[in-house]
Image (cartoon, rainbow, N blue to C red; front, side):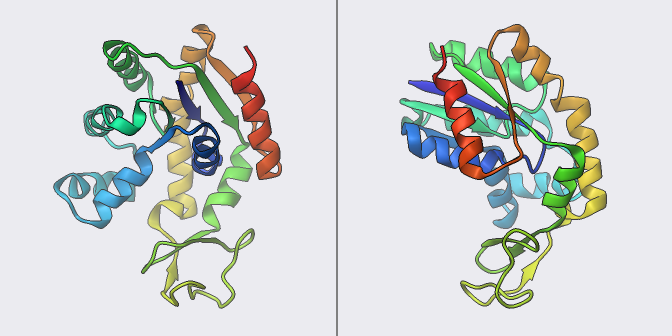
Length: 216
């Protein structure tokens, strides 16, 4: 049983690291960002509510996110453990997670904070592109498509999401610093927080996280 939280600003690499760690330890990755984007894409009632917040780069209201996560944590695949990626985003959500897990007889084992500079985050996020048809991800610097603006997989149109535009990124980082960053102090006081440098090779960063998880 291993329950983890990955913290870090948008673009810190939480999603990719969470997938790697979930596979390594046989636990479930819970990405609120992915869940919310699917709801927006499918134009569900929740997705329609969420769309206006995501387009502005603002955080989705606590009650909507908490409802999704609470339901997800009760599913069978979380019984062997999970890794929360993109949640909690503020102290209120963190306190709800504690209460929720306490009711299930569980707790958080480690909180990993991936640290990346503001300048590096803007470079990473503003270069991201997505296929409008199949959702395949690209980056104009790190992972460009073979043909400009054309998806390698399905030949669909590659575009820049609104929340990856530079002005929106700056707004997202301000929101992060104001609301999410205080979580580091919250978890530090509980003796759960470990800071990891998020610049370097993917495997190098993964090994740093693994060492942090397995050190007792």
